[in-house]
Image (cartoon, rainbow, N blue to C red; front, top):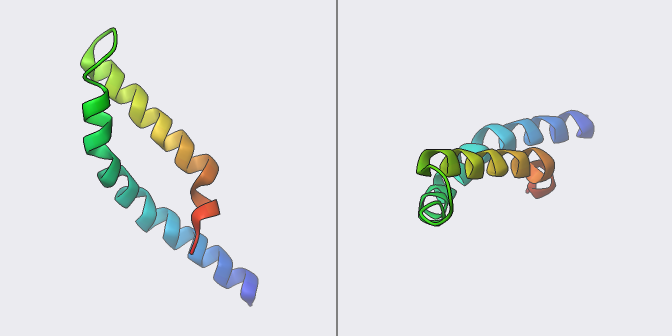
Length: 64
């Protein structure tokens, strides 16, 4: 029973936590993307891709 609860909490954290992290990171992603080479849109996309990869690797480590 405990394992099922942990899996459900992880799933809920993934569904609720990911959009919250994306919204919180948006100002930083947009600001940091102002500097660098290449097109602004490409830099923003690259940083969001990095954020998604970070969440895939470490999102479940942050489960409360």
